[in-house]
Image (cartoon, rainbow, N blue to C red):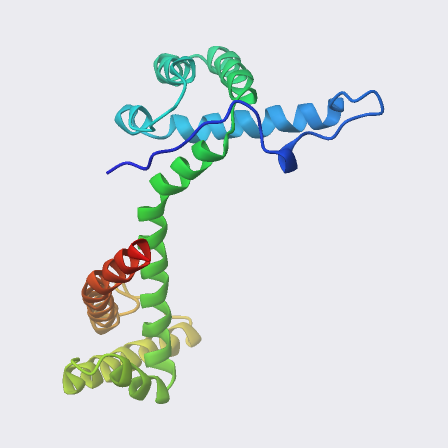
Length: 212
């Protein structure tokens, strides 16, 4: 189900541009506003057409302009079209569009965060003995013996690579070693399973909030 964004044809009071003494927006403020809106237009252009069409309440003129932008290949043509898109967005509340872009990018952001978390755990398990105890406390279903073996072998591979580098030897093709990669895959799979198991609980919490 797609979010139902609402577009107001005037920005909120706290978003009004700075004004000069005559009550008109300053040129600097207008220039920055147009720059920001054109940057937003570029982000919207990264979304597939069906996602743009699913943004409920988007003015038809803006949707048409964004779809036209996807067909333009020349640099100058795209620049002019983005200027046109920026002018259209000046007349509406752009916040729902920013929310749509953020929603589109969210899955990728979550995946990147998950990979970084797995990398941190891998490095800690190799470097810190206490990290094993913490991991087992958070993920008691892990095969402790298999995990210990992977950590031990990854440490051996890492030590061998460091020794070879210190002697000026050429780095092996698989510098980190098989255990290093297998440890990462094991951690990533365990974290993914834990996140999937927690997802229904999060959904239930959201439903309870809606019912209140």
